[in-house]
Image (tube, rainbow over all chains, first blue to last red; front, side, top):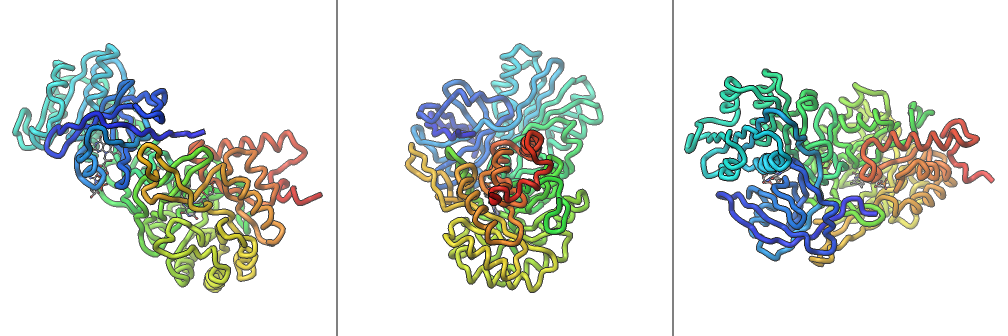
Length: 273
Length: 301
Ligand SMILES: Cc1cc2nc3c(=O)[nH]c(=O)nc-3n(C[C@H](O)[C@H](O)[C@H](O)COP(=O)(O)OP(=O)(O)OC[C@H]3O[C@@H](n4cnc5c(N)ncnc54)[C@H](O)[C@@H]3O)c2cc1C
Ligand SMILES: Cc1cc2nc3c(=O)[nH]c(=O)nc-3n(C[C@H](O)[C@H](O)[C@H](O)COP(=O)(O)O)c2cc1C
Ligand code: FES
């Protein structure tokens, strides 16, 4: 029996969302695509392989019975090759892997930063689909052109806020500063975060001051994605992020000394974030 | 039960290369019921290894081409110290070198650490391009490396060998004669290949990799069986052990302890708890009182 089947999928389309940021939509058409394995939840990820180049993890951005999408930033060899993909090309994926955001009733604050926003978008759709209360959403980026999915977020909630580091649009400042302002005015029951780890870390510290539980998606160098190579392990608890993450709760994060501080690089050597 | 003079709580050993980079994950294996752990194979300098995909599953196990990713011996030994501050469960430091002399140099460094044992990985098939043929295929090179480590080491060491050597039993005996205190049998088999039929391309970035998991279990069982008859030193029987019953087979043919690698892929890191339970369930229903009584059972008439 194969535990984690690979699925060779056909590219339906690729679009450039912003400078160097692309979304690829894939269709489950080949006979090794068994969609009964593929019920993706917000926060989960897939391993995407470009033959001859490599394989890397990407968050699932959208998933329905017939197709699936992910968004990526061009930063290295695999994303460079992905950016050149054309409709009808083939990509192989494995997944969906990892933990998901758990939906809960009450006043939810969703925070997405830069190109790590896709899981937040998927979460917002899921909350709406399942009839949860409208969340408050913060979408933050370096400049206005990197604010992804603004129109969609605007439709999903009346409480949509944007922030840009350079002040080119909306709030002038980062996600954490905007969050701090909101927390002085409103009460929240839960905060969901996906963004650069430093941002997530400071947002977490802020939430802790108010005693608001968080769920945060983290990234680490992932070589296998299935819990055997050890490249994604977090200290000191030995949490295996590819399986027991990427979405972690405040309760778990309180025990992770690496959070916001240290990661393991390609060789397994420890580096500062 | 003692293994080379050190107390072990269970016969299960986390095999090298499985979650063995950080102390935290090896401690988890111990908390979950492993009796001993092995570090990822460490070299003198850090190595990034091969690019992903580094594993390709097939119906019977895995092929892997991790390519000996490791942060190097110095950082690796810092993890050993972290590990030893938390537990008495023995830790085996796996080492590998590019040159014959590297092994003694690495062994000297391990001696100065709190590690309990050394394992010489002479057989990793993942780096042949760079290192030419694995040492484990050449009985004279194995003898030379073992003798050189034997001269410098103050802690017991095991020699890990490759099933690709048709004379693996002779090699294991030769290693024992040159001073090896035990054998780890076996490393991954072959090179294997898994092909994606839609793109007509190998799945692994490196195209091929070592085969592990259930498919190699009967081979590992036979090798341990034959080695037990020739060796006077303990064997860590490794290869395809996924269930308690697999472990019992391995003990019965002569393994002193049982290495567990690919089963972590199938059953998660808490596989050790499950294996302990399955082994104990068998013991309780049998005439035996302790798993150590199973060792070498097949060889009694
Ligand atoms: C669970 C998970 C989900 C992810 N989801 C997404 C996603 O939805 N979209 C997306 O674009 N990326 C995502 N990533 C990150 C993505 O996997 C990396 O960006 C990937 O390494 C890019 O591969 P590459 O071969 O193009 O670049 P590489 O050759 O791996 O890297 C090129 C350079 O970028 C640096 N780098 C690599 N990863 C990161 C990182 N995460 N942050 C900052 N610098 C980095 C490297 O150190 C290197 O210098 C996710 C990662 C994880 C673990
Ligand atoms: C992903 C992976 C990485 C491995 N890395 C190493 C290694 O660094 N050093 C080593 O001696 N063996 C390594 N091995 C081999 C295992 O330790 C073991 O000998 C082999 O896989 C057979 O056991 P198994 O079927 O239980 O996995 C690796 C195996 C796998 C699957
Ligand atoms: S990526 Fe290999 S263990 Fe998580």
